[in-house]
Amino acid sequence: MFIKNAWYVACASDDINGKPLGRKILGVPMVFFRNEHGEPAALDDFCPHRGAPLSLGQCRDGKLICGYHGLEMGCEGKTVAMPGQRVGGFPAIKAYAAVEYGGFIWVWPGDGAPDRDALPKLEWVDNPAWAYGGGLYHINAGYELMVDNLMDLTHETYVHSTSIGQPEIDETPCKTRVDGDTVYTERFMSGIKAPPFWQMAMRAQGLDDQATVDRWQVCRFTPPSHILIEVGVALEGHGGIDAPDDKKAYSVVVDFITPETETSMWYFWGMARKFKPQDAALTESVKQGQGKIFSEDLEMLERQQANLLRYPDRKLLMLNIDGGGVQSRKVIARKLAQEAEAN
Ligand code: FES
Ligand SMILES: [Fe+2]
Image (cartoon, rainbow, N blue to C red; front, side, top):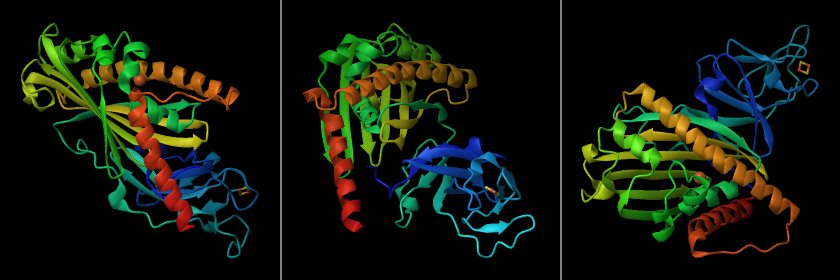
């Protein structure tokens, strides 16, 4: 079950430049392309003629040309033309609201009125003080497993032991709090050594990578499945997360999780960085490092999902470290109930 009346990331802006993209979202095959003004459009990936996927066709003057017999589809789901045919009586296909923001195409799969204000506010968009880099993983695991993963970073000590993991994560309890539909899980560590990934960031920022630091992780979940995590290190005793910019390396880990099916997801990951924003080589090396870190989660989650499918009746434990995931799932359940009631 998925929350339908919400914005999900469908693809990167570049993915639909000059060509359509087919992608299954919330169990529905959709096609994304641009209209004649360059604005994004989203439709069922289904040609009304014989049911071919429109995404196998091509874009021409803001229309989608079916790759089978040349039917011309408009961005509202109505057939515009077809060689040698009158198309007035052709049935329309479903169109979805789509917007472009922050380098992504967002889709609203539900029937409710799309609410532009419900898009997450991304501080780094069009802001020269920030740099952004990221990528996409397709993962064969239900999206809730990724929510659990990101709302409890205790796993860093084990899954990411060579990059961002360190024993102090285990030793420092995290706190979870809920504010309306937003769930926070926070952990603050002080007087520690930076792990390898953050040492690299400190060097890039011109800080001594061997210095003692304060480190923070502030995870924030908002429905349907967006998680932004403030992370970083600051030279010890300068205020941690609130330290002046030249005393810290501060980033936001960006996680937009879009369900593909009940047991698979599109995972848009990235990092928005508020230090050395002009340094393109640094953006690339942060992206490489982060891509490797998230590939470690990918394997864990896929194997976990396979286990859960194999043993669906086994009861799992709920520990204090699981609070962030538990609270986030409660928000998801409440939203699902609201949508079920409205229908
Ligand atoms: S199936 Fe698309 S034009 Fe025939
Ligand atoms: Fe992880």
